[in-house]
Image (cartoon, rainbow, N blue to C red; front, side, top):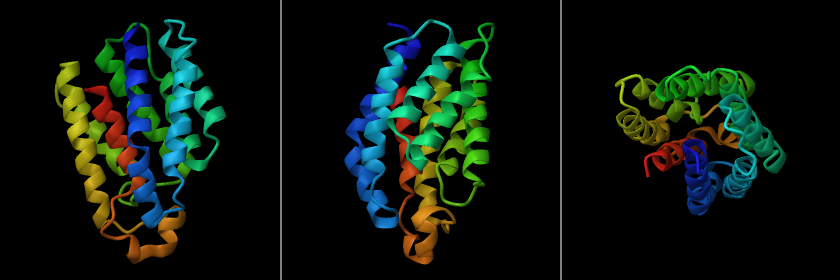
Length: 196
């Protein structure tokens, strides 16, 4: 089993394990389907991990494509976009930590552009951005992932104080305040899974 395969399976398992929590958060300030979507993303990740080639660019692209097939919802599409954009940023000649940094930054840029969202708008970006910053805090991969997981969780918690601008939460405005963003929680769970 490759490192990528191990990480992918950890993330898929975590998405399934936390699906009920995502559903609860999304039901309070969204349409309530994020738990189902997380499960479908997990299916896509598992399908993509079945055909890993050992070429990081190809493998990330293929996982993204499988996610887009399994989870064609808005959130699923954004998650798939992250993998697809990351595939264009990584390199076989870079160290693993450098690929992690480049991949997550490319994912952030792609998701932001596709979702037309910015920081502070109570989205998954508000957990992903601090995680990316934390990845740059050390040159040790394990320490960087631990720092990123902590930063992503803090970012997700901070969304409770943000005014939503996207999706159903954007429609309910002030009523969403005090509730953490479900998508930001998905990102926190992903990073936490990477260090499990």
